[in-house]
Image 1 (tube, rainbow, N blue to C red):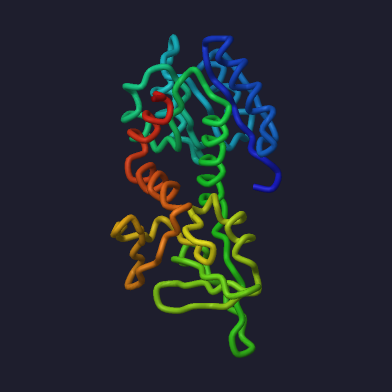
Image 2 (cartoon, one colour; image 1 turned 180 degrees about the vertical axis):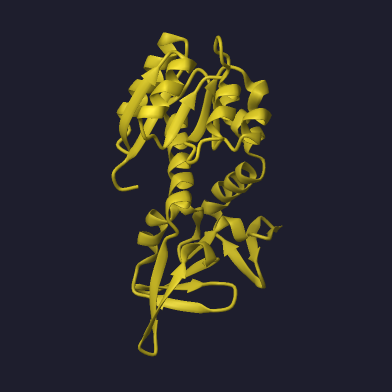
Length: 249
């Protein structure tokens, strides 16, 4: 979203509320930050404000964060939910409510930044389906980014591969890597960018890693192997991955 996110922070503990609010106010991807220490007040604010996401605690008096998220899920256009809490045991309930992230206290700046990235990815998916104009034989087609499985670098061009076709566009791979990061694309080689949602298999042979997407087996460079593994594990098991990140060594 080019105008930045609009968020509401809800936590009955003032120090935690102030900390999360401060960090979000200093994130350049966030345009507006509202805050309250009362779940009841939060509901009133949400009737007046348009927000893209709520960052809320779980254990709060009167109305818990889980109960509040259940109310929000019935809104015509519900905001994205991120739980920020010291209670790890509620993660399953949170993800059952389609929360995009579950951040454990004490909150780290880099961990909250990752939550913002996930909010952006979720809101972009909801608000618009990005399409890429491609030309062939004097005809321009618009290919949804969600249909692109992987991208190969060809000099100053990039070849976009879908399930049954490929298209050459004059855009460097490095630019697509930046623009499509929030859509789930990941660099696995200096000449390859993949949509992680389409990975069917991961092969490791003699220390070399490759992924299978459809009928294609694509080589993963050594420098990108660990990041790929971490992303695939986090996507497959969000609650477990999130817990490990915040639990520390």
